Every structure is written in C-alpha cells, then in structure tokens.
Image (cartoon, rainbow, N blue to C red; front, side):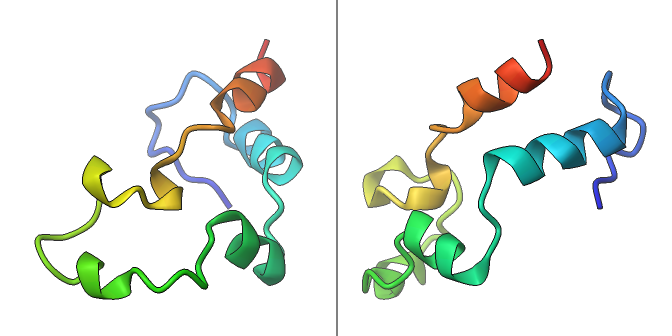
Length: 73
C-alpha cells in the first residue's frame, strides 16, 4: 500500500506497482540487498543514521532510482 497524502503527480496504485517490479521485497532478498548481516549496528546507535554518508549504509543508496524513473516514462 502506498499513501502519498495527495502529494504525488502519479496514481498511488502505479507507484505500488513500480515498487513491486523494481524491488525484491522477499525477506531474504531484503537482507541480501541491504547487506543487513554486516555488523555495523553499534555505529548506528550514536547520532542517528538517516542521511549519514560516513557510515556507508546500504539503505541510503539510490541505485534503483533510474529503474523507477523508467517505469514512469
């Protein structure tokens, strides 16, 4: 389910379809793609982790952005 709270120029069902096609959302794939078995969590506990480039966390990567853009062309 996607809820953009009316802020998107695209239908929410189309966004949900794009996410399903571009991302593998099976638990094993999420663990693999985000490299969640890497022991970095102690460093994440201090000063937060969102937007911090010094940590090199996998969930900050934008490697799927081009695929998502193509879906909406």
